[in-house]
Length: 549
Image (cartoon, rainbow, N blue to C red; front, side, top):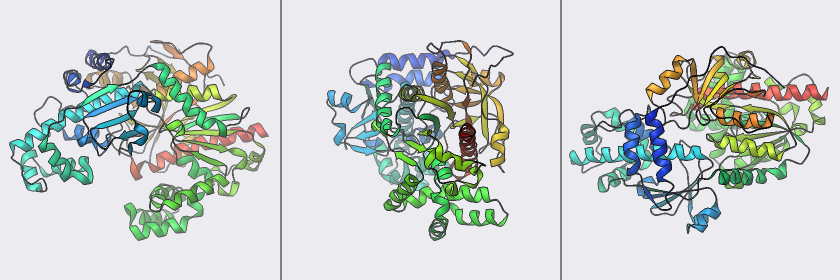
């Protein structure tokens, strides 16, 4: 489908010399074949005046920046001294790191494959340059704030880290202590002991950061999916998450409503049972159903056998889950439209003629949205691996400068910091497509989005310039996805530093996150998540039903 677009003004030409210097600093140093001290990044980090680290140069700890960083690093981080970044198990093995035998560790705020040797070395698998842009500032902020906190604890002569009164005196107020303990997690006492015992002096080594290796990594990822995508089958590509389409199309949560509600009432999970009862009482069945979907995760995690039961049920409805294909932490689902069970569909998706889908040959390939430039590599790999791509639908998380938590943002202009391109396109979704699924949040279409390299790699002056130009959405994937879409639609690579009118239909609703992806939406993002996902699923089903008619 071709949707020509016009523009009434040129996009902003903006750079931040401080941010650009920071990026050049760490990329030039990481070319070294050995370890690089994180202290080498600190001066450029301080000079960048990052909006997420406004207190970097102050002597007082910036607990917000420390909490953000700590949530995106594993709990073993206080024991780690060396981080090794690579793109494949073969790379790590060639460098002498037997990561296959190391412990898998995870973070609370970022999906990234991590392996820990149980000692001082942590291995991180990187899928694109965005992982470097994300990790380096996080590590640097973590180290700066760790050492500032340590200085305050030593100056206060803290002997009992379990004494919150003493910690309050050292840090200034009780809220600071609560935030610190929240950042450190359940092992906060042990970590505070570590903090007093030693400073933070991290080293980083990059094994290979070449574009070729990123492409090869994405190809390995798709090769693990390919057996579930037979040749010649048309594909609808969706980038969202691993639960929304499965819940809307599979029906497990609705079919096991009584079991899930009994679990919620027994364990009082986030007071969701009373919220469900209130929604039913006032006739808000959409919200009640969304609560069941949201609750399914806690219900499944309470018993390992339930996950297998969910997957078996989904498989009966044509939904096949492929966790971490190619050992990359970007889960995938392949959904056979012909195998969907009409009675199991969410009521909002039971469209006239839905029974015709039994004759469809089309598949949905849904992936758990990757980080930043990895989106480009993954969509490119899918486009090369399938014969017919019938649609590209992107649902992601974003920060908004003028909306509220739970709003949905639909963009028609995207400026990409990676390429300095500005994409103009007619979005296949409008507010009218999503608003019927929303009762509490607002749907804002015709927005202008800024694709950033990293949450840390922004400062107020840079963001203010874009805000004055009407850019109100900030996220990390739209630009890379649009670059890949341009190459699918055009006989050349995506341009650089140009105004691009892209002749491609790309659906990009973004649900708002607070402080540029710094806080989980949790329960409050449920309506926007399922509202956007339902609009995407409805459009795919309508298109396919129309084709079959």
